Length: 365
Image 1 (tube, rainbow, N blue to C red):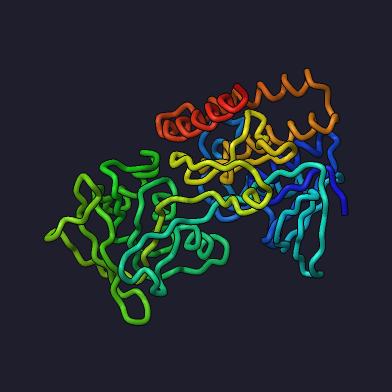
Image 2: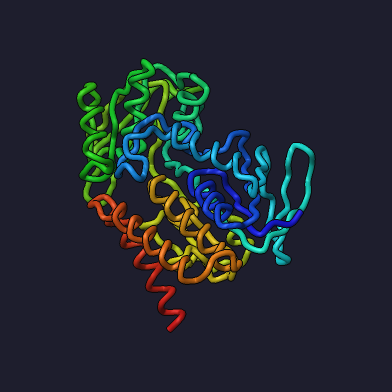
């Protein structure tokens, strides 16, 4: 099986890239391990921010449905769901495992939109049943309709922690507190205000000390942190919970990028090791593109824009569209991307991307 573009990852970035490439004449294969396309969007019941052209006021599950329907209706896209990408090989092939068995497909170009994994914290009892990542809790509630427990301690006040706390209360689950190691809340004020109105306290400069329980979580101890993020003895407080939910950030999944020999660099502002790539989302390995959380932890809205830029760049690289048209359309997308990243909470992300840009320019210079 040969394709002009192989997209690994059927989330917002991968689907947006596949659509943009296919709409410009590229034959595309989309590979995703889940049975349903959409990635994180399938469990995001909250409404997006931004502006109307970029899904402002639309719930993530609806955005995912629109992308999924558009991809399935596009004749140039072949979809492989329930399929795992096992490895990349130097002959531009990918070993995949689907319900029908193991096979190999080849591509002229690749877009790795493999997403991210949740970070865990080290503390006594962190391996007890009842300690979840926030994404797992969101999946249980919003995809399967299962309450994770009766009473929750949320660790982390970024947007994910705040949104999942609100959704837990909507599901009838008590959220005893949200603890945040930093001196300020990490997410949008609108989300923080919503959970505070529900009576959920947000404790900054606090973290979890340990979890209690023999066979599962039966409680937790939190404590205050000093300026060096060390626990302050004597400030401990016990909380009666049966779930500890960790919303402590994400780390890009770059396994296939490492296998492909892509140059990687550690950028803490982007979540960890990310590939070095240019403004077209192309890595230093010609024909290998990246988008979404695999390129740096960010919001779904920007992931979709980066996917579109990558898909457009693939079409130009394969000669499907003239260079002048590519540059015109790419500039429009780049301006929208810059606008989405212009807010104060995106300052860390902007710093990270400036570091990537400086590396690219330095190597070319």
